[in-house]
Image 1 (cartoon, helix red, strand yellow):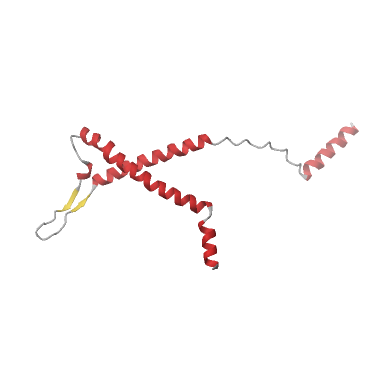
Image 2 (cartoon, one colour):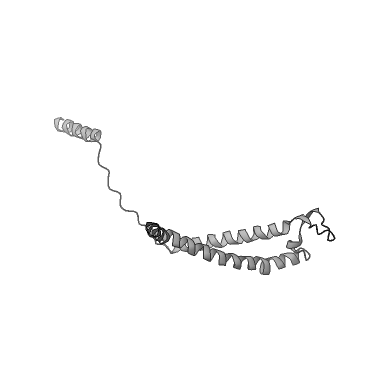
Length: 136
């Protein structure tokens, strides 16, 4: 029973719940960005580059053989380019969201700083100065 109680306390902490919500929203946001890159951004770029489909850009290391069912060995450069573009879009969107959230926060008003208490040396020197001023 103690294990279940500890697990409940762990799972109900604010950070864990916030993390779970963030992961779920992040996954959905990732699908949106993937669609944005593949369906909106890459077609015009492909058109501007003469109809090049980035997914088809590959570096062939070894051609496969259909008769022996040996697959092609390729480095998929186009998929990498798509992934980099997706990452840049996600990073920019997250930056903009964080910037918007930060602008909504009220600026923290700094508490007035009280003068620090004088050290023993300062107190002693002040007393000496005052005594010398009285003698003069």
